[in-house]
Image (cartoon, rainbow, N blue to C red; front, side, top):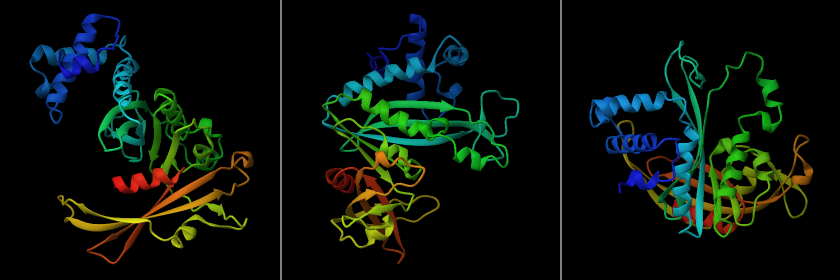
Length: 311
């Protein structure tokens, strides 16, 4: 049995021939991921079968993803701690005015799709598979509507996907396994921190907002300023490989941990206030005197130290 056959053994597309075709398509594309469909296909019949498979409206993408997710969960069961890495990206399909089913992206001169995925990874950095994968087309926002959009409830915004993906990770991963949800600055929203989490579920978010935090004395201060007064808990040296645009660089990473309590605003629910910990990772490049800093909001000291150690 091939890797694709084993990975997609739980797929049910309503017809055994479709299941078989799915496996063949995956085998061809995985064998040559940098090639186009005509070049990756084993023969002309396989190429035609791929296009017909994608055009078949009876086939639901969710059925394919669910089969892969089931295999992912089986791999997750072999670990005590799993990282659930959330991220959003775009597919830029160019200026295709006649193509249906696509929408606005950050490149205003083009159209495309938005993707939000949750990748399960082991503590040692081995990818285990996707837990969640959503694709959607964004409607073009008319001028002057930005302020109204920001005032909408979280459930009416695309930001809700961070919460939905957290919930999906918690539900899919067995309760006895700890899950650490990791995300970049876009996930620094209060609603995510206030969202209910099961035991063993933690957050590690790169901070974008310089939030007000409460000291043990009850006084408030800004998060970034508070972190500057914390002594480093460790240091690690990293080397960034060279590419066509940049030379190789060596930098030192310092990590600091700070325990704080969020101070809510009028928009945020005061009943949902929680205690958090922050790991501040400061990067100093050998080739430059500039210092870059990334603030990571997390929920316990152990998680922060493990991330610092993995970095």
